[in-house]
Length: 432
Ligand code: ADP
Ligand code: MG
Image 1: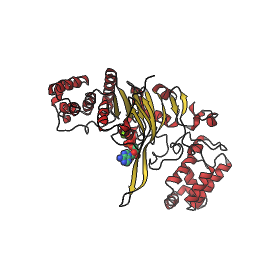
Image 2: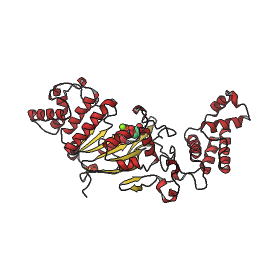
Image 3: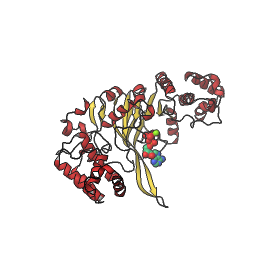
Image 4: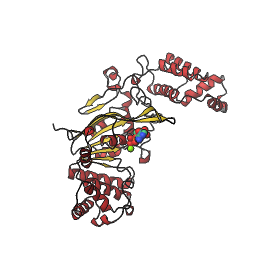
């Protein structure tokens, strides 16, 4: 086997969080937290995940537009992190970045021809007529006219500008294109034409493409392999067909479910999940997805209906991260005429259960007792005690360790404990 064109190992990018007038560092945003993948020549790898999971940071770090905090990047066998200025310049020529917003990537005062030719100039091609010939040829290849070289960016639509951006990336004859949400800013009606253009130039120029997107539907169309990112980590990786037919991570399953939503603008809302993306400056311990995961694993001695279990975990996570404003809750319940039965505390506790879709009695009496104790503490305004009770009664293996990647199939793996032999015995009842 030949070496991959691009090889990324444990790539990490943390941003400091500072506070106070001295801007002392008080924490770190773990935007990218140890990701690894390979990309072969001529291959398209999709890097997919919801907004804020670290995709753009990964792209900038591996291209050394920003210095990574840690990790290794190899390009054609050479160590990118060790590149000096001259080597970096050569690397930047072979590895081109295309952005989401085609408007901001052009200087409005330069003609399209000048913009597309600029990389040639920067890389030392002095012959003006030769530059012109290359530029007009490329404009035609991306579906524009040779005459368009003399026009200005504002005269073009978003889709046309993205074609020009592609021409500019191709002008230096790169081996790799990192395309960061290249069609996300475009009308759905034009997306397909830009994607098919990307595919045809990729074949023609034998390009490797790192295709970044939050949209699994698009990834399925264009990518040979997929890496799914969640909160700075890759949680699943594999051939596109395998990942789509047999997703190994619950987060991937949520992303896939989101494709079915008819309105593409809704696709990044993962409505099957509770809560928002956690703060990457304070990621959850263990599997970072456990705070939202529908399949979060129960402790060995518990066997609740999975939805009830998830709901109890929601209470646990909510009390840990947000707490509860007891005064507002009292006011709310006080104003609800149909809730006059029972003592104040009973009504408050019942209201909290309802809010989280927990039945009045959990099927397991011990679990129900523990939950009730926690809710007693909440209505006593002792959230700290409630947290402790919940943490002791409802631990999950998912919060204990960062999960390893488990093999699903050839070249297909997922970082989810459900594939660990300790938990494999569980039948996947939810799937039928
Ligand atoms: P994506 O491209 O997947 O939407 P980004 O890579 O843009 O995600 O961002 C990942 C996380 O890193 C986000 O929480 C974002 O706020 C944070 N982030 C990105 N750039 C910076 C920066 N320069 N300083 C601090 N935090 C940043
Ligand atoms: Mg981004």
